[in-house]
Length: 316
Image (cartoon, rainbow, N blue to C red; front, side, top):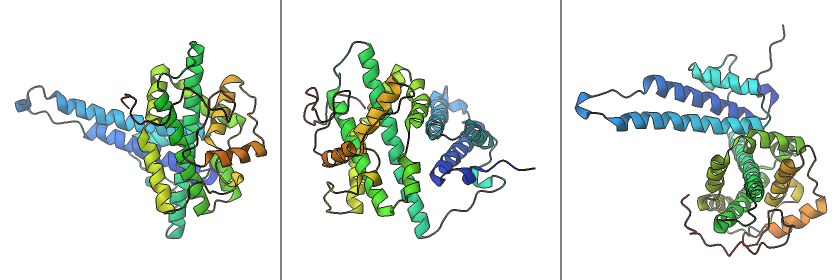
């Protein structure tokens, strides 16, 4: 009898890592649930702080696992594999204790490369998720008859964050020397893939959940951290130079176009010619360049977005 294939036999290693995170977070949640319950001391009276701390820890672990599961579904990992990892974890079985056991990790330079490729995968996922949330945020406002952004500074910061993440993903991809197959696996999401991503993410978010994530992605620290990484990789290098378009992830505004297409025309692929992509690469690389990533034609500046100012009163 042929056994079912193991996850590490059917998917890229960075997707397998998602299942590992789901399983190990499930173990952590079970341990806190069953062994982390605080001991009551009569001298403390009600001692509600202890109970609140315990419940907060449980909710944080569950939220972390939920976010990884969203990523896994958007990546096309079968729900059966996700459920299997969650179930094994809830039974106290960690990923490295599975039977048959997963292969041991690479060592030396191979381990470093694998870690860097996983970093590119994380950045591409964050860019795709940001694109989906940005497009849906604008779409829902328009459905209410609202066509101006209530928090333009935050919207501008979100765009800056996407540029910074794109630059980091592109630079790390260049340093690693991704193969054509790896590039296709990492960012070759087609129209069907965008539909799957939207189903796994924004179609499950109510308005408050969408707003929360939109504000999280507008946090200025995202840009700061990404820029620091690029500077570490290439100190003093001009960030306006990069690899050819086919060797970098799709530009942020093209991702948003694809997300908008998935919202407005289910099943219809978002088209972007190579000439348009090449021109967009040249236009988007400098961090100070103004961008228009909404429903306006590419290249036109949105007059509602002022010059970058970091404090707009948002509590992020």
